[in-house]
Image 1 (cartoon, rainbow over the protein chains, first blue to last red):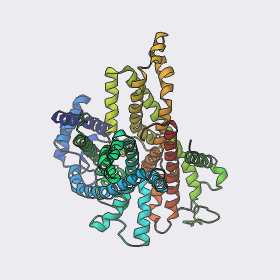
Image 2: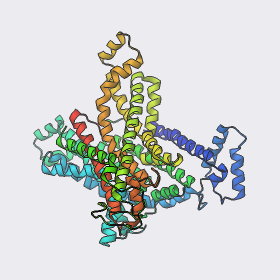
Image 3: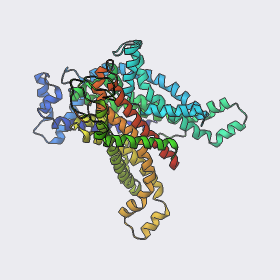
Image 4: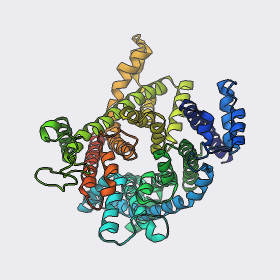
Length: 306
Length: 267
């Protein structure tokens, strides 16, 4: 377990190096003064001087890159061009909102996805199955930015039940959470169905039935427990991508999270903001996939952590 | 292939034909501004209505379809090709090459896909090529992993030994003997991925990172017309319907192909 965790943390190094290399190349390639473009035009003169020295334009490119990394580690730059605030401070401020939305969407998606997938598998090839399967493949094909706009049009602009956009209490949360959960429900229902069907075919299911326990117990205890692994993968990966900021959903509903922050950064070409968010996003994503692996091991000890 | 799969192919061919023959289907130029017909609701002259600059929505959808669909197809083809080459080499040669290539693939797969695509689109000049590149940069890895898996099994087959005994070189074994065996699984995977690529393209365009104005794509039309959601909903609804119908057809086709070949892969 410990060796596994260490290995996972080590994987972060090439990942983060790759991203910082990308941002470094970007800062060098941009027209204008690279130092100014890193710290922002409104930075204090001593900061600019310090970074100029650290980056040492006379030194070779490798030591310039090393200086760049040192600057990131010290939290010295990565300031927004526009607000001159540290990007990481803003991310920490906005993260709770993103987390709230991610949790709300997951709470909606998990029970619905599981129930639909379960029904679909148990009633295979019936009308119920066909309806659920068609609806879920459709759910996967509808872009969230469009379904979000339609949901807003119906519930906010026409029926005036909920506010169309903004950040705040639960009234603001409902519509973006529903929007975000739709593709997740669809994906989860599909995976649950496929996995359950595979397991229903296995000999141990037949054994369980032959022992004479009720069908419900067979399904819930014997079949469902074995289906957990792929199901958890889907839930975890969705949750991980929500934590990176549901860029599209947050933008549409004006939800003040990481996703909208990235979007604003893109619109204003505010590179430190974009790259700060990408770096943090990658970090969260790796953390979540690690957590999923650990959960696998907890559910099924036969699975080795590698 | 099942009936649903055939219907989906039919819909896709219809959409592609309509887009290709756009000038004959709709008499309006997609970019011509018509100040006398601003925000016209759908009517007999403008089937899907007009936008805030009086441009015909149907024309813009048809011309935009050319871009959205060709980007998805190009991205799928390039991801497939890159993934095929990497996967073949990785699985066949094994050892250090395998380890290196697969670590890169794992690193790519451990990025959140849309975020990586956004990062690439921001760095490179915005445009069609950048969108294709952004999708391929993420897309090749899952193909490579899948193909490596099947090559690992195939390379132990007797036909590979036979080919080697006949004096075939590595390149010939890879591309004449192993690659054809991988094609069904690759095609199915491509089918399963196409819908997702179309949605990624639409999302990037929606974020303003795709083809640049005045060129229309389905995603950028929705973004540009968002402000008129309440007063002129058709400007947002029709492009979205096109995205959904096309992605749905790709997904159904992918599922049908998978069932036809009896493969157990997930898109």
